[in-house]
Length: 103
Ligand code: HEC
Image (cartoon, rainbow, N blue to C red; front, side, top):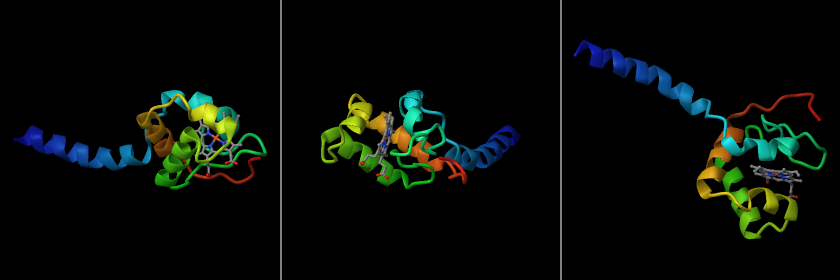
């Protein structure tokens, strides 16, 4: 009984931390050249993604993938990805904090 209580407490403490810091997506390397690992764009033409709403990011990526947003560059980047990949990337970028003084 005591062990169960301790486990429950640990879980309650650990869960919010997990929610705010998602695991780094395996596909992040494909995006980082332009959007940065933390969502601060590395090139002038790319938008910052850090802190943007996850639902919005996910929807935008789906729009590139199915051509509703006709941007060949982004279509190539997200074209081969599953919904789960896109959701993981959206959660990651959404959980980042925007930083000042980056290009
Ligand atoms: C070669 C550079 C490049 C790469 C690589 C790239 N992007 Fe982009 N991304 C862009 C540019 C440029 C835009 C703006 C396109 C437009 O005009 O709609 C954009 C737009 C976006 C948007 C829409 C943002 C908004 O505010 O509407 C999302 C989301 C996004 N990219 C996610 C990703 C993800 C996730 C990856 C990796 C799988 C990725 N991008 C790879 C250059 C890139």
